[in-house]
Image (cartoon, rainbow, N blue to C red):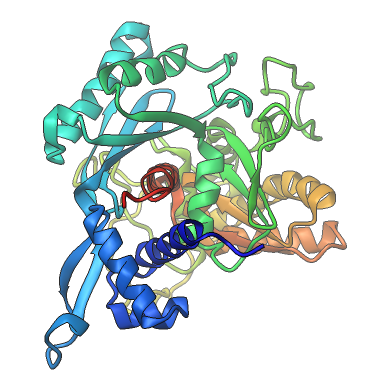
Length: 451
């Protein structure tokens, strides 16, 4: 049965808007070429979408062309605004963008759990309010259309609500209601952080060429997200990918329903990685797990020892000491040296045990052994063909860690699996939250343009 004229117009309008969303501004001639529609049909839909306030003329195509045929049409970016949040156990980060995803403001704030639920919610809500104001959202945030939140824990697939989970701050669940109260016109939704990271890697990151893959999140805790045939799989209770609870060899006890400390988390969580680095001769001081992995990967690739900055800038000049436990001798502080242009040690230089020339690769080998245990279990069940090592730690390990995990996997499994390092790292949660917020807003705004 052929579509009615109104249905056909709606389909054509949505097709044009989808193209403008994906490609950016286009001329009427480009829309005709990409849609395959006739010139009169394209002219009608352009007029219709312009009148509805969804698209507008944003420029002209080419310096040599002028007039109606050269007009570039784009989505009206300030028709609506979006916010994306990455909610961790002790911090919150936010991005505010326009409808086409252009970031207008961002920020982050630490959240002290000991301050109490009310104070934590107030800190997080205040951060969003400041970002919305900085972004210039009109009407005291009245045009904030969609808020996407990424948080640890299980999201109920039936209700879309963050489930009460042991070990997670209670203020996480209260934050959704607080933001809805502060921005009553906005659509506020929450999604598991690892799922959002996988969506970001699929759209903007290292998995853009894959419609089936698994993302293994390695950060303070661990988790996994499963994408099969282009779709994210959440499971019956929203718990797909709770790999931290996976029973594995090498731990002191089995995990329980409320505590994953006896499971895979005990091998690859941040605290476990810091302890593993110490076993291989590192004296990490106050360095985080991802900084230790980053330094080990850099030394393994042939870099010179440098002074890790604990404050992200020009702070404490003390050096990461590496090599004592591996070589049986005392660790030696090394001065900051210039790295050769080639990125490799100077010809004729003898490896210094304290530099990490041997300790760092052995640490990465041991870490890859641990990571491969969980990856092999996922591969045996799902056969995804590709596993992305995500999160701050997966990204920090880069190609050095990914190659080691893949090599171990080849020995453990008959299923061919490529292991890739994330290109988005910890930023993937915010990017995924923004992408989903943008899609939800556009789905609603583009569903039935005014005529």
